[in-house]
Amino acid sequence: MVHRYVIALGSNRPHGRHGSPRRVIRGALDAMTEQGLVVEAVSPVLVTRPLGPSSRAYANAAATVRTRLKPPALLAALKALERDFGRRRGQRWGARTLDCDIVLWDGGVWGTAELTIPHPAYRERTFVLKPLLSVAAGWRDPISGLTPAQLHARLTSPRPLPIRAPAAQARALSSVGRATDF
Ligand code: A4P
Ligand code: MG
Image 1 (cartoon, rainbow, N blue to C red):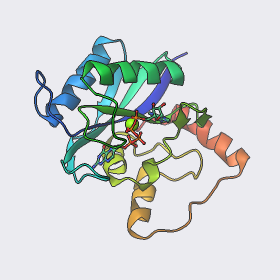
Image 2: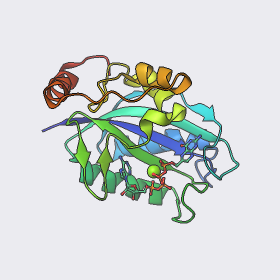
Image 3: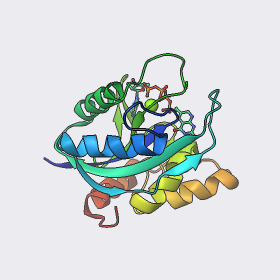
Image 4: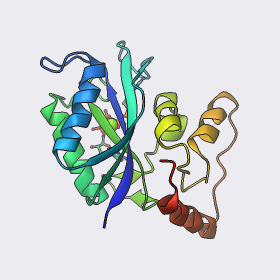
């Protein structure tokens, strides 16, 4: 079965061969394609202010991809890609050549010790939500039912997150599979 995912990419360290963070992101998307992921849509690459201790600006983008991989297998593939791009484990939130997070998938909620989808922090991050506006505008958060634009608006006028009843969550999931605008 083919699944669809939204992946967020970030980089704030140049790579010896690929070059600037912006080029790292382009290179990572090319590598995903070479590995058999179908990259459907790619957002513009934004230059964003660092959240956390790192002082270097980030390049951030988001992409929608299609693959037969289940979430744990996709996470393993993305971690291998981060390693290929020279990312070293170290300080949490430290400067990194490449960070790839799974933001959403068409299966709704996934929750294990190693992997949580939706990504637990995406609703609070402009540098994730802005790229989503261009590639996943119709993709609702399965927990709250809100679109990226609605989540983004909340960052400037915060309100508690509405939590959907289970039946509404299930309807949202089945409509994600049919949506054509991501
Ligand atoms: N993990 C659980 N759920 C997920 C998921 N949905 N996608 C686990 C990916 N990984 C997930 O992640 C740590 C562990 O989270 C993984 O091993 C996986 O099992 P990591 O990428 O290895 O570590 P990290 O990135 O240092 O930590 P974390 O908390 O994931 O940081 P974030 O959320 O990635 O944030 N500022 C700007 N402007 N732009 C940025 O992109 N990024 C960060 C890092 C900080 N500040 C930033 C940016
Ligand atoms: Mg990460």
